[in-house]
Length: 265
Image (cartoon, rainbow, N blue to C red; front, side, top):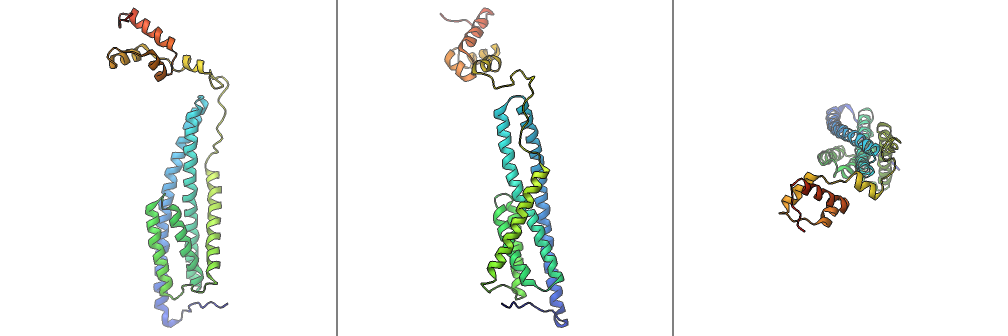
């Protein structure tokens, strides 16, 4: 199989300079997108750290449900970070390939996988970083335009699978490197066990929860009575506040003794 590559001579030196300028421009535009992705990663990393601290505190305080919510949000954030970091590393590899064009004349062998890599990245981050995706779409158009202008578009169908394989390989390498980097930079989600000196080292029973955690105050009950126009359903209050009916009745009797309410017989 023979692949024709353009050969630059003194007669087309200007053409080579123009091509070099266009490739440099594409590389600089890709660098701008890298900077955008880096900023997004910094924001997400700060958010991850904040949520991780909250998850640890909640877990140490015995608030397992709240800690689980934080942990799930952290997991979602890290999935997004891996996608963004994969795109960032893949763009870096693309820029290195474009730099190679300045050294060699194998433009078709470089631009073909570059276009496919950018197309893939655009689709992967469209829902995460739409502005970057739009920019990548424009950059991909520029890359394809350069390929057309230099007559280096790959039309041989037998070459396209190899080009796709190279693009896929680069993306896979970037994905693995991104996962390793994220795991290295961020703490694991394995939350520590709460200290043994907490009042409830184990989840409290239903009765303990009602007595020691959910307890309605006189002011809360009095406010509820005022809002309801003096009508009170003990069962409804018990369900709403998660307290025992006897607690509600005791608070009512206390309010009555203080002369704050009058209980009908």
